[in-house]
Amino acid sequence: MKKQPFHNFVVDHMTFLVEPDLYKQTYALFRIVFGVSREDLIYEKRSNWPGQKKQSSMTFAARVGSESNSKTPNQAIIAVVQPTEPAKQSSHVRTMLKNRGGSCHWQHIALRTPDLIGFHRHSVERGVNFITPILKDAEDDLIQVFSGEWMMPGAAKPSATFFEFVQRDPSAELLKQLETAANREAWFRDKTFLGLYGEKEKEYQKGKAVPFIDDALAKRISAKLKGLEVFEIEDALLDEVEADMLDYAAKKRKGKAAAAA
Ligand SMILES: [Fe+2]
Image (cartoon, rainbow, N blue to C red; front, side):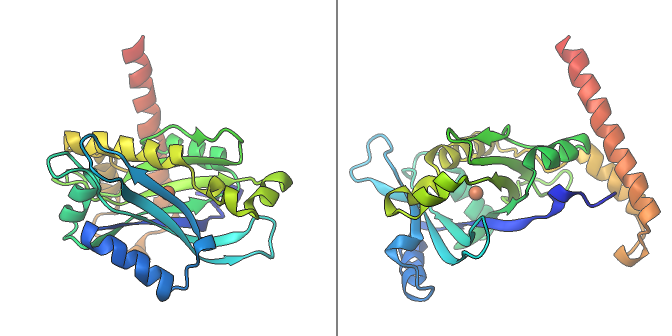
C-alpha cells in the first residue's frame, strides 16, 4: 500500500443521466444558471434509431469552468445523457434511472491520472474489473478505461455507478486546435461515448453488470475487516487485504490461462 505517481487524480468530467422530461430543462438551466455558453458546449450527439421520425439529442457535454494557467487546461465538464431509445427498445440508461428512483443519477466520474497504464496495471493486479480495454483515440491525445460498477457482493441490481480513468497528453498542436471552435469536440469523442454506451447496453440486457471487484474478493475483504470501524483498521491489516487482492487476481489469471490452454 504505497501512493504512486499515477495516484495523483483530478476530476476530468462527470456523467449525469436524466429523464427525457428533464433533459431540455437541464440544458436550459445549465445555459442560464451555470452560464454555459455555446462555446462551452463541447459535444453533442444525436440518435438515429430505426423508425425514429426526428433525431433526438442523446448527450451534450457542458464545460462549466476552466483554468488555463497549467499545461493541461483544467476544465470542469458535465456530460448529460438522456435515454432516447423508442419505448419498446431496451435502454440501459432508462433502467439505470429507474433503479435509482428516477429523475437523475450521477453515473460516472472520470478521474485523470498522469499515468493511466501504470494505474491500470496496479488495479488489475489487485483484482479490479474493467469493462473495456484501454481505449486510445486516433491522435493519441486521450486514453481511457471504464471500471465495473461499485456494488454490494451479490446485489440483485447493478448500482449504475462506476469510474472512468483517463490520461490526456495534449501536444502543443492539439492545444492550438482546441482553441478553435471547430475542434472543441476533440475533448469528447464519438467513439468514446458510443463505445461505452454499447458495452453498458449489453450488460443491462443481460441484467448483470460487471462489479468493480468480484463478489468472491469482496467477501474476502469483508471478512478481514469484520467488526472493525475505519479508525480501527491498521495499515498492517490493509497490507494483508492487499496481499489477498494480489493473490486472488493472480489465481484468477492462472485459472483463465489454464482454461484458455
Ligand atoms: Fe466519461
